[in-house]
Amino acid sequence: QVQLVESGGGLVQAGGSLRLSCAASTSIFRINVMDWYRQAPGKQRDLVATITSGGSTNYADSVKGRFTISRDNARNTVYLQMNSLKPEDTAVYYCHTKVYVVDYWGQGTQVTVSS
Image (tube, rainbow, N blue to C red):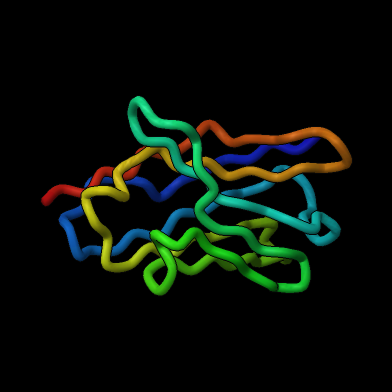
């Protein structure tokens, strides 16, 4: 079982930056894919960014060039650096991974971007 705990959310003005962290309760060294999702009020949960154990990354078009996902296997932590934030980035951000066939989610961290 994997527990994921997000932190780093908050209120920021448009154009500002935040860094989200996702701490795992177990070693992530052998976990291939770790993701960040987000869910705005009244909307579905969408994939934001993905990172593999080899360091390959993928991003939603809406955040390309502004967000950067990274992982520190020694600290069992995944990060999401968010720059040039926009009001439409306002959402609850969730860390996610899948081990075998089981999905694991964090509790989420709120990001609010004011205009």
